[in-house]
Image (cartoon, rainbow, N blue to C red; front, side, top):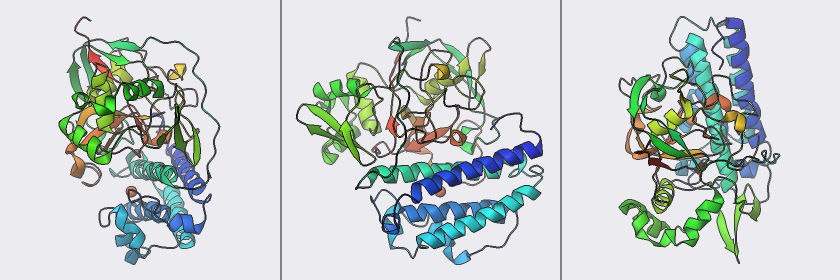
Length: 438
Ligand SMILES: [Fe+2]
């Protein structure tokens, strides 16, 4: 969202556009498969697509129509079916879910009433309304489920149903790493109007100098780790990581297979050779961490990642995005499912950070060394289940968004978190090292 949307008419239009963009994407992800596919569970890790479809409508009804608009529930009997905390993903196919047509009709009806509410709303005067926060939260929520649905598509067996042009090719030859000098910077935000509770408040963090990979680790580099026996040597793995690697039988990123002398991967229903220059995708935190140790390096902390992405030494302030404060465009970053894969490492020169790092936003979610913890002075808002219940050492933070993340749900302060074993997500990483010499 642009900072200059102080005129309610402009803000209203921007909110309507974000809601529509999210709904168009939801439709694109669910209209391309038949009802059998929509109601099937493609992996125990995921909900059936038809659950996501009605859940986005249900959350929109709950937050916008009921909490903001004061409306009565439209169908109170379905609320428990779509409460993400009431039923695990594995249980959801067994629930009496709305069939696809009814789920679409319900979400459509909610949206019609939301547009009426938006038209009449002053978009100020209450914390949920200020700067259209609740509307922004709902647009982000739907886009996050669109990313989840894209993961379901990746796990789904069968012929390809999605298509997109390839991302732009990288042309530049870049140094392997960049230097981020020592010193304090402001992490998190007090001013980003649609930032979620875990991104707040802004606070100063002082870091020693460090060096960071200019771009995410590539498939070619990761293949060297495999070829060097990285998966066979417990030296590179944490104790839990090694136990998991043995139990799960990990030997390569998810969706990879070996065909004679080359690695293949399955990507949204198409099997193809693994492209060497592309950032590695579908690796767990344990694999990322093991690779970093093998390379004589480490994963960056979350604070290091954010300083590299946001800190501008010329002005001594933190930017909204690596390239500045402007909204992401197609020149800046690979976002919004514009492409169905990451761009080659070193792409997007217009999206470079002041330190010179590329692709911090978009392409692949980047695992960091950090546990998901609250910032000093954290307050849960607008509900504890958004972040607070997840704080703790069992989740690792990912930063920067992937090609599957919409611009509205991505910014320099945005934090994602997941279990260190997860790899069906669009996860990659880059590595860092201390720079005692700097
Ligand atoms: Fe949700």
